[in-house]
Image (cartoon, rainbow, N blue to C red; front, side, top):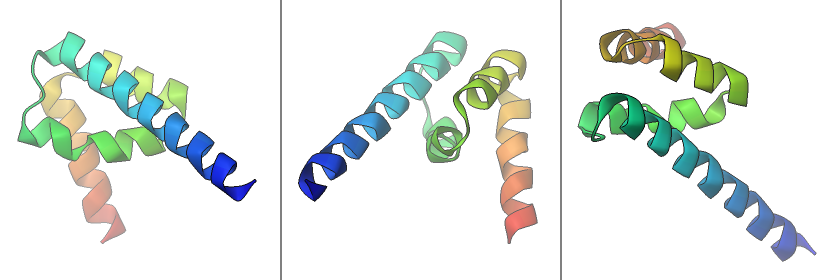
Length: 74
């Protein structure tokens, strides 16, 4: 049963990653190293929050948002 739950969770995480990567590609073109660094933090957000950030912020604002978060957490 645990293996099934683990596989399900892994599938959910992969789906979130694909969605985030797709949204970033549609908005910004290719995903470079800077954008790749914020994929994991974006995945950790609630769906509406992550979508709102990607859709409303430009590239520099989005990168700054996560850079500021990382500095606050350190």
